[in-house]
Length: 191
Ligand code: AMP
View 1: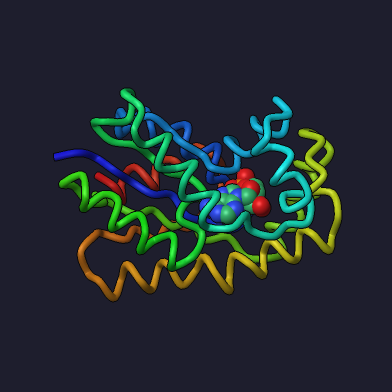
View 2: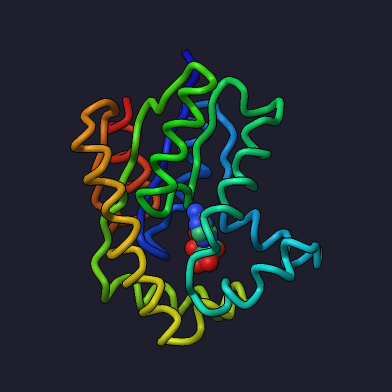
């Protein structure tokens, strides 16, 4: 049985940081669609040029583009035993696409981790990350608000989708606390 996991959370919930620890715990590679898009931007690839304005605006890249990028990544050798996906799926159509994709390969999700962090804490974290990482999509308060709103409107419904399906354990974890505290909560939840 493969080990395909998801980590969910609003922007600056600590997904990337916690995914780094969780991938060790689960012993699977970490694949972040946000990181993949940023690598394309940095490398000035065709895809990078295509998504540049979308990332800067805080909107989502179209599903067709994102799903294709993920499909290609999931065909690579290192993720055949499983993967920890971070930032994907981001809406219910992507979640349904992923189910179909995995089913076509004779597998399905093993677990979903959801990091819960309230809005005021997110905004404070985004402001400090904007300075440290020089991410333009973290610096503009309107873009930040759009990304938080987009998470609530489009990404949170994925959690209801998985809960309604009842096929995969959904672990909701309090994401406020020290990195170690949150890491331990996640590991306890996932088992
Ligand atoms: P993140 O680092 O996960 O916050 O992603 C940064 C940006 O990449 C997002 O604001 C979106 O523009 C884009 N992005 C990342 N993952 C996805 C996805 N699954 N679907 C659409 N756009 C995405």
